[in-house]
Amino acid sequence: SKKIIIDTDPGVDDALAIALAMNSPELDVIGLTTIFGNVSVKQATHNALILADMASYPIPVYQGESVPMVRTPAPYADFVHGDDGFGNIDWPASDKQAQSQSAVDFIIEQIRQHPGEITLVPLGPLTNIARALEKAPDIAGKVAEVVLMGGAVYTNGNVSPVAEANIMGDPHAADMVMTANWPVVMVGLDVTSKVILKPDLMERVAKANPAQGELLQKACNFYMDFYQPILGERGCMLHDPTNIAYLLDPSLLGMAEGRLRVITEGLAAGQTTFAPGDRKFPYAGWDDLPVQKICIEVDGSRMLRLVEDRLSNPVKG
Ligand code: BDR
Ligand code: CA
Image (cartoon, rainbow, N blue to C red):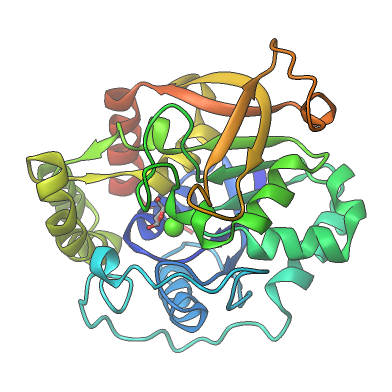
């Protein structure tokens, strides 16, 4: 199975994504690293420990960065995910603790120990990933892939007309990650905003798999309250789970190749700019950038069937 490190700011859709990954035998979640974003990094760690307890095998949690590299921190998304990141459900804390090693050091150590084997799976702002790259540039040649949820190319952003929340959380970090010489797959709003989870699916999951489903279903309520006026019906967008779906079955997604940059300052800060790979843009160094992949299409109904199947059937440990 594929060794992955999930870098996360849980977050309701992060929780769904993590459950999807831990219930999938194709993936071996070797650690959860936490990042500020939907909530503070401290709350993200608290939540990651709760989620790790739901797995059939031990998953260690490492706390990460608390602020972006350069910009003033954006406000936490309490209006989307609740103050606690789980839709204000007052869930009991885990009795476990985070590891003492930092997220950045864990990421570096694992990639060096398993060259070519580790896939980084960021579901929040990219600060931990960029800091790891800055501290240990050699990891670029040793990582299998960086499969990240973030950005928007052919569709609007969700925190500004052009910026998606994870990229806006730390645009400098995102620009470093997308222009580095390692294979990046961007799973952005172009696809994630098309995968809509409806309440009936979560009801079936909660019935089939109460041990995990109770928290997930409860957390979804608040998140669906936020999405209801946007969608015009009750449901929510499955951003972070689409990232995991790509790892499980890339045939669910349609891809394009090209060069990526992130606008770091000004009115368009947080915008992901994409130059399709067959186009030449002989200006400002575009043609020298590595060619990365972005997702532009998704088979939403097939992905929802996969999500339901995996969330309903925890892997017995
Ligand atoms: C992303 O931002 C967060 O609110 C979600 O967890 C997801 O990672 C969507 O823009
Ligand atoms: Ca997230």
